[in-house]
Length: 120
Length: 267
Image (cartoon, rainbow over all chains, first blue to last red; front, side, top):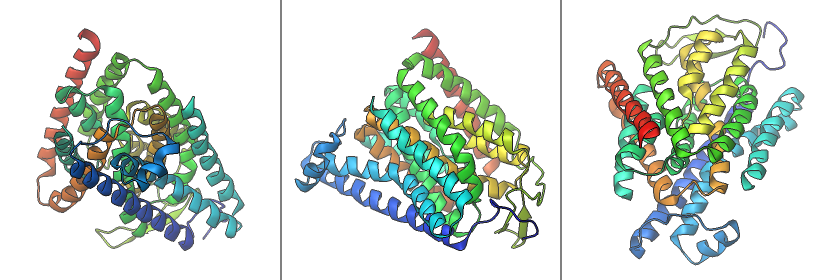
């Protein structure tokens, strides 16, 4: 690199983590969504209009109720970008890249803030 | 109903990916106007679809080294803050307000698409965020940096707010911002904007989910339909005349913007 620059280039490691987070999250959520759709079609009730509350998700999945799988699939999809940011944060910590730790940490904090703000 | 939603999502996903646009901007008016679904639910469903397409495209773009993940992460500080502001505003805004705003944004998109792409001039290395990628078409290594960083941050906040408010990806704002203002090469700008879109959409999607605007009966067929459609679009896109597709897309958006404005003002 011609000039020293804290925020210049990516390390290989970060690229690999981002790739794995995106692919893993997407595959996981699509499997859950498809399972939910198959269960809903099999039960002949169509897809539910509402998602079950967080507390009942696990119970719904264990009971093979479609709503549980569908809600979990949607949550997994929504958390996939968060997973990518989290992965980058951890890699930056390991690589002692403090500028990037600060940047990814801020994005993480804002995203977690939206979880808390959304509840109101 | 779910099959109809899936079908429309598949079509808009295919059309969107052929044109390099997420498709949410067309999907929301289609579901609201043609199927009569409430706009808050279509926005909630669209934002989930936006995350799905951004993630699927991101897998390919990151592997090819097209996206500037560092720059994306810094600009995401601004887009996610914007997404929270937009998401919370959407929750409190009445249907007619959102419909009117969407009508305005649709007209903006129609105008923006008419200016053609690649109008920006890549500035080359600037010492700020310098990086490089291999252009898949020419096979050449392109080295570049960015300029006007503060303007980029401010525009990113605005793009995030509109994305959170209307459930669209907002690439239509981010890509021109990166090429025209920040001087990035078009390919890198598209791939970087795409990465930002996923994180931005996830931030407001979480707010929508908690408020019950993400209905599985709409959001699941939308997410799956857009995903399948985007794959179809990538495969057949090269064989079709993109110029005519663009024209068709703009015409559709114009028709829907008139219908949304009518809904907002008169119904």
